[in-house]
Amino acid sequence: MDLITTFFNWDILVRSFPMLMRGVGNTILLGVASIVFGGAAGLLVCLMRLYGPKPVRYVAIAYVDFLRAMPILVLLILIYYALPFVGIRFSSFTAATLALSLVLSAFTAEVCRAGIENVPKGQFEAASALGIGFWTTMRTVILPQALRVIIPPLTSNCVSIFKDTALASVVAMPDLLKQATDAQALMANPTPLIGAAALYLVFLLPLVRLVSFLEERGKRQMTAR
Image (cartoon, rainbow, N blue to C red; front, side, top):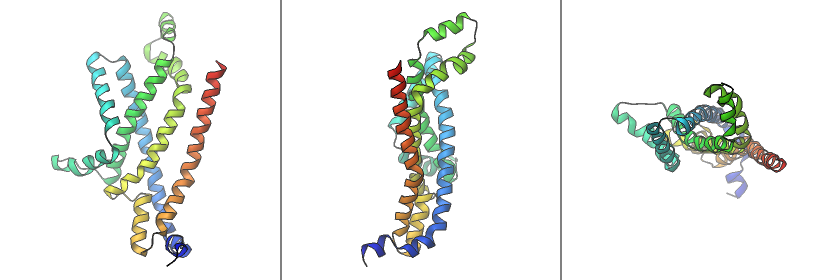
């Protein structure tokens, strides 16, 4: 068998395409859910670390450090395979979403912390002098300014999470990689894996270009200051 027949077999690719597209839908759903939950949790952890009581700050620091050091694959295996021994069971989709969200929340917390600390403290003092409450100040004054700094790294983290969704195949979730490996086994040909790689590129390359655009725009804005 030659290279084309083995890895780029058009007939096998066409036959496996419906399976791959089901995997794409599950991958996108998993990525979006992880980004939404991980982003919200990360902002909450960031605020706890910056403005919570000292014990809460220490807990937030430990949370961030632990999850930034923990490989996603190890965390996923612990959630899906170890927790049932203590009576906690999750579906493969829930386990993957939880693992990805936890890790993303740790990185998001650090990015948000850097962005908020970049805003001059005088902004808080001015808002306080005007009698504006903490949460109103954070929502209307601090976060809009911090977003200029944190959007590029946040977008980069989201791209990384989308790539890490491939790890969900370890817990038998029918994501794009799992569907591709199943199609490979069914058709005794690795062409579906090449098709899966192409589909990953189709929806990840625009996100990578978006990250580059946001980074360049951020640099221009910083230079303009």
